[in-house]
Image (cartoon, rainbow, N blue to C red):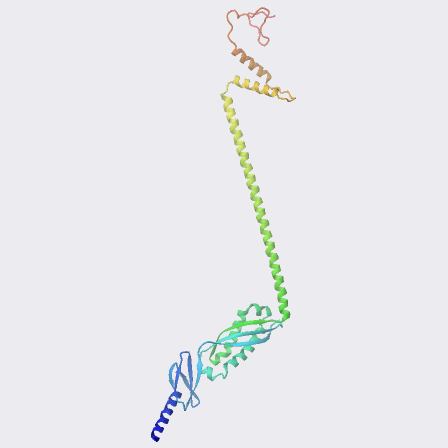
Length: 314
């Protein structure tokens, strides 16, 4: 009976000791092992056996983590008071140093972040703080990394989430933004009007050029048509009989004279025209017979012709 109780106690003790001696360390974890108060190294990942009497362990997470820094008040270079909150992303690179060099990393990092933020913002004017967040993030990361490096912690990124300037500054910024947008709208409208005027002027210019070109082509075509007509008339006139031309001339004079005009058209070559008509009529008359060789009595030769040699002068 007593032996059974003793065996049971021994088994329970061994089970408890085994449970206290075995550690299962995950891939993203490490154990800093202390034996009799001295750091003897890292353990893990996997199955780790420790002495529950002499050994103590400190667990370290190697995954990247973040730390939220609440609103911190800072003064810019141009004496503007602003409130900023941001996030720090960090990762343990040396588990032993992260345990041995700092007691509470979160509290220590928050205090370092507050002082670093005031230092960085104090070197920047308000406009740069509002517009150059990337530069401010980089400066904060460098300053924090310089401090946390000796703790075995690497600051991977710093992101500013919100910047709250004073109410007066916000109102001034709103007015400035409104004025800037009004200015841009006026510039855009003026540029649009300028472009429209340029386009209209170009259209008018092209229309004038096309109109002048059309008129020039029309004048050229009219001149060519007139020249072709004159050439045709000259060709026909050159091939026509002179008598036909004289008769056509008389018909033209007749049509001009029959018009209701009060002007009298007298051809410049009237004598030549009459002489040509006379010759035409004489040439077209029938030849006289033998009885008509001599003119009748009392009829002398034509005044326009000189007397023949056989006829005495009157």
